[in-house]
Length: 417
Image 1 (cartoon, rainbow, N blue to C red):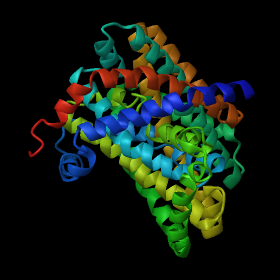
Image 2 (cartoon, rainbow, N blue to C red):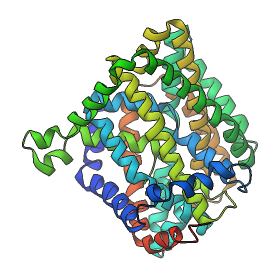
Image 3 (cartoon, one colour):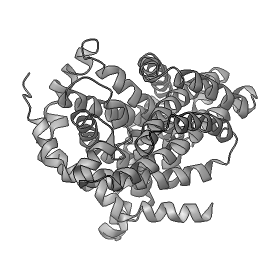
């Protein structure tokens, strides 16, 4: 575990942080701050046209389902535990600039009619980096997209009901297998039904908990802002800030939750028959829902209560009902994320090998990993997840930089309609 932790820290060092934040800042500025100044246009063409968008919503729901997972609860708790309250600020910063990264991934996926591997191939004029990205995506699907999810869901059910975690792993694996062997259309349909329900349930619970601790919400915001720049105030300078646990934890765990910069969501968005601009807008909405909304609610619940974990907060607020509520939420989050990432992993694998046998074998191993992950040591899975998430980012963002003129051009496509 020590070795994987060191590797993770090296990968998520200043170079990757600068690449993520720098690329996001460049696209945001070059697009004229599109996510902010075109907010009305974005809302009109996403939520305003949910039932008219030719599969855009179901593709986005699959991406949101894979994005809004248990990381929105345990990931936020882990970020605060490692990086303090200031990590939440850097999650917000990463999400703000991540909105244009996700826009780019979704828009390019539709433009080049394929996932990240297609636009990476286009950017570099060959398949080498696209294949490397695909292999990392397949491996990442077993970690953050699978084993972390079932591990978290199993742990919550064990605490709430005394249920052996392996039973939860088996249930999630069985449901995932049932969906996977029915094909991509069923994955998209299941996600479009599951995602709105799970988001509404969890957000409602967080708002109820925040009402209980409403007097501490302002101080929670104050703690987030005052802690974010401690390395600078202590004379550490910019380098000290980049090396701080607060920034590293906020960006890495934030990326784990919203996935902007990894390119993974492109594998869902490429299924849409929408145009690049509209699908890109759904990418912006995904990051907003995942981090600005759901992760922020989790962070405020933890910080305003003064309790270190979300599960303890809900128990304090609502007793056994809180445990039941959070366990159900975790199960729905885990199931949606596992289904979405199974879809991602199989599509990435199909780029490397067109073998149907390999696809079937992947599904079997993936479902088996869901069971194994339910009772594994979580720190090890976290480190492995951070490693492959980071490795996906390098070729993906370099390709986005190379294709940035096309991305900016897409944002200018009839923005007044």
